[in-house]
Image (cartoon, rainbow, N blue to C red; front, side):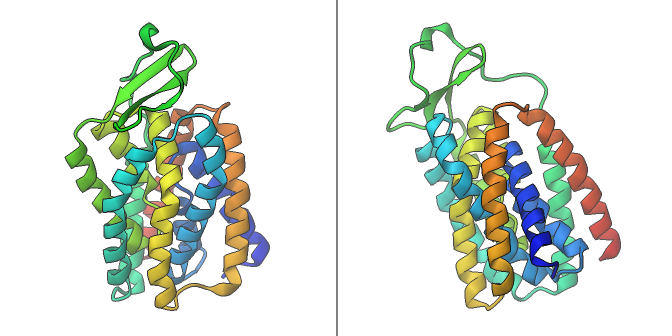
Length: 273
């Protein structure tokens, strides 16, 4: 296990980049820890810890901005949590080599999902200029304030989104990633929710996914108590910094940079495993 200060730094960078791209810090932290020699069985709980800490730090600013859609997040998290439970229970029966290969595939998949989509699906509409940013109560729709006006949106293909979220939870439980790299594209590409709303809602709900998996990992005695404090502190600081920088940086460019990094990590993991 890396020294405490190194863990703080790694968790801070991972949570910060994860908050910027809406992918969650765990999908970066867990592969890097495995490359540094940490057993995947021990790295998975630390990934969920940094995901939860980053989610907690990012919650308040994103709630104030009106980007988080509570009803959509809770709806998606219901099926994701079931997948997390199944994945966490199954992961105990898998070898370190198998978990490393699963993690490599996850990193590669997230690299592809993180790439920016060309074009803009949700455009500002002058009719909604007086609309307050946020969700519309009782629906899976809402509006947010963009640079050039107010953008209304409504979630589509909900059953397909729910099925994909169950898969995101399964992957999260198996590998220890928060699942944000799947949740954000699912809401954006399948359900046609704007990227900013998808990223904020995914980051907000990742804490619930992490908590579900951590209950199982704690029962399996897989949580390294000595590393918990360092990872949580780094995740909290990184999540706060990532959200603060989110307003000044392009999420699409950040996601593109992260996708390149994840692709490299995936190749190295496959070669080493």
